[in-house]
Image (cartoon, rainbow, N blue to C red; front, side, top):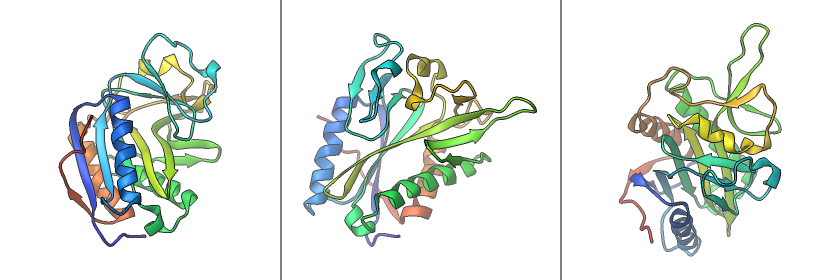
Length: 228
């Protein structure tokens, strides 16, 4: 479903602290709900950190002293954010987009899959496993790796948090947690660069924007949101 007004599109080129980002998201979401601001997609990178969603289990934090850990109100379990990972925070008005949270999450999946397609990667979804996966199996060695995470929160029918696409993060940083609570040795984590695609963040951003417009409608560039 398209929206009549273009979605504002902002990119931060410096590392943004997690608490500052959440404060900015919450303020913007409240303004959207009040009809005082337009929808916004905010692309950024965080310094290395772990976040725990509402379903996170303490046992899945393997190395609590490695990076800062933030408890957050988004859905999901533990995940990692850090340099080389493109986080896209989506502050969208779901009142104008059908009031269907499941359909919204499916649209986020379609967005990621569309962006991956620009680099010749077949992104797939799996029942019971949130996010977007790639099949890296070889004869006699089944394997699937997660290339993008999804975690959302809805307040007054406005979304915030969003998606995280692994472009070129340090994949060893994921070992401090059980990502999304999945410990199966045949299920791992990958990135565009790990899969042999030497993609830069600006190139990933361009693919994300084109795929976003295919799914959600037009976007327009704007200044980055205020960081407190």
